[in-house]
Structure formats: C-alpha cells, structure tokens
Length: 134
Image (cartoon, rainbow, N blue to C red; front, side):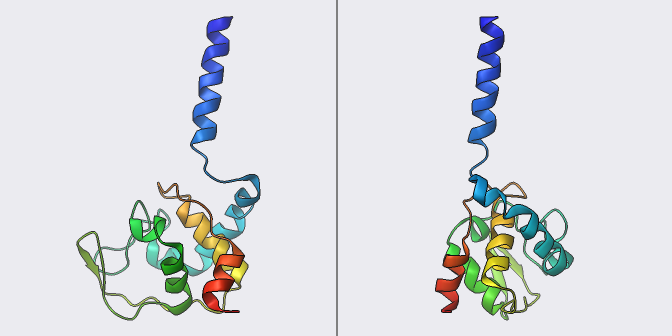
C-alpha cells in the first residue's frame, strides 16, 4: 500500500511540475489556439514546425520562449526583412497582426509559449498593452 501511494505521489508531482501555467493562464489556451488556427497555422503549420527557408518554427526556439517584449512587437509590427533563427534564415515576411486585441495577442502567445514543446510562462493582456502603448 505504501509503495502504491509513493508512486501516485511521484506521478502527481511530475505532472504538476510540467505545467508552468496557472489556472487563469490555462484559460488562455483554447482562445489562443483559435487565434493560432485562424492567423498563424497556414505559415507556421499545425505542429509549429514552420516551413524551412520561409517561415520560422515556433517549437523549442528562444525567439518564442525568450523575451516577451520582442515577441509581442513581432506580432504587432510583423517582420519585413529576413530573419535568422538558430543559423537558418527565413525569407517570408510576416504581416502585422495589430488588429488583434491585446487579449487575443496574449492568448495566442501564451498558446505558442506553452505548446510545440515549449514551456515558457504566459503573456498577459497588460504586457501587450504596455508594448502597444494603448
């Protein structure tokens, strides 16, 4: 009986430690996935792998999991010049998505920062608002 309880306890610890998002942040996932499917999937693919030489991957790259401000600026302003990530250059321009609300941007960035093998923390609408300036 003690052995069984021990294994259940270890499993629970491992499962909860692998989920870096709070309950409130978890609520961003479904809306973020919807925004992703509508605005991002065609370029970055369903699995976040991107298209070699054209659209960068979103999986396991510091560009996605690192500096939130830079990532928010990318969504708001787009990218018009070639982008180098981990030694590979991507040439397809990314349009601005500044028509999305602060909450939609926070949701989609939280989604990509916590999926595709990523485990970065969430983005909030307040952080997007600060970067956007309104």
